[in-house]
Length: 219
Image (cartoon, rainbow, N blue to C red; front, side):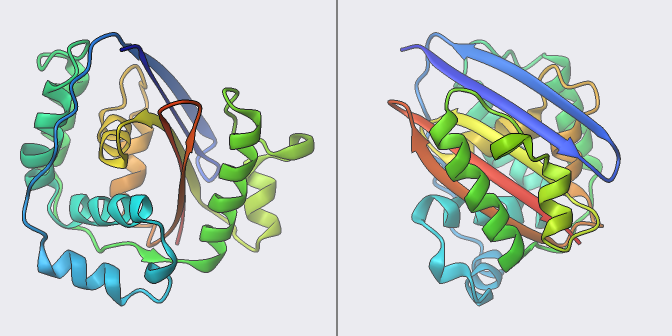
């Protein structure tokens, strides 16, 4: 099985961006069987927009918040088995090592609230990317930049992660955290950035087996 994963992140408040590409020739997905954490699940369900999320986005939203609240446990129980299932990524890879160090020293951070404006931005951009697939960009129709989309929506700062993966959104999240060949380590910094308190996300399936997620952040 030939699999492709593309990750993109832009921080318009910081003015940086990065992209990495992976091709997996052999892949056996793992299933994470951890019992649901009541604190995380209750918080997610308390959000007024939660019921409107798809099953995939509920899963992604849960694990993002889980990683914020329990970074070390997320690494040990989720990231480690996911990474081990991908033969092209060795556990002695320096990005694996740096992710472990970062997650082990990271303290608990407040969980992300769902935000209607960010949900709309993520949904609209995901639908645009689904039409232009396999070309992925933070720019939208007619070359409108991510910065312009956010500012037009009334936001003055924010970030956007775009993940194209396989199997499920847990793999998307772990690979975004891993930041392979991303010197700035921008994806993990966004997920763990305490200044960002609100999130919007939208996931669709594109191509034959690809999972496309757009995740937007703001304060």
